[in-house]
Length: 282
Image (cartoon, rainbow, N blue to C red; front, side, top):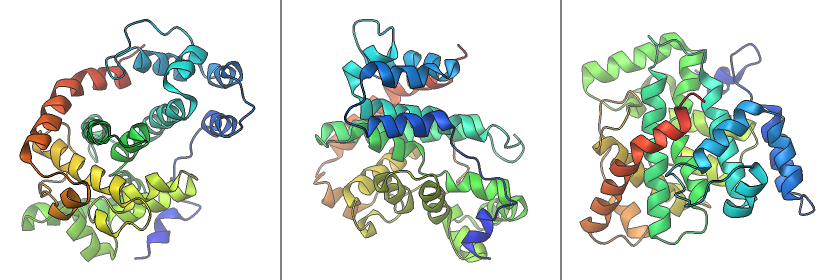
């Protein structure tokens, strides 16, 4: 099987909504005003409601109520809000996956746990792009959804074989298909024209030291995935728990277990309120 077979024209590849690309283009235009950015988001009432709910949640922890998108941009920044727009749009794209194939609530709970842990790690390490790293963590297993949508028979075969042989899904994917969900995810994000930081963090979240440009970000997502799995927050369907990557720890200069324990506790503490912010019906 060829990876590109999953992306043929007749297959079901979700597209991102126009509002995301309009907002992204405006963010990249230095002449755009907060009001102009707000008008783009305002064209989608559901998106506006979700964004304001998240911005006003403990996910950001602002003391004062944020009432408008321009106000939100003035506080968290346009690029940070762009990452938030991206997150909410993507979560909304995979509602057609049947429950018997994949429990999407559990899938996104795991993704949010990974993204949250990644953002917490990035903040502790004073990295400059914690919100982008959150998105990378959120999307790390998204390739699995494309396999589920476009090759359901192989998707089921992978799960069954992994369970029977007590192997990781990635190992079985590579054996059956010749590639894994990490490569599928990278190709999807490339087609969506998302930044390289997201493409590489998704592609290399299992082997982060091989990432050519964003190895530190990939290392963060790798460790965040370990933390999310350790806490059993949601599920991506993988019964094989990931192991801590010592080389990733070394690249990030994390030298003690106390650091991981503090991230683990903070992730556990904030996970439910983050889930409610992203999924609560307005």
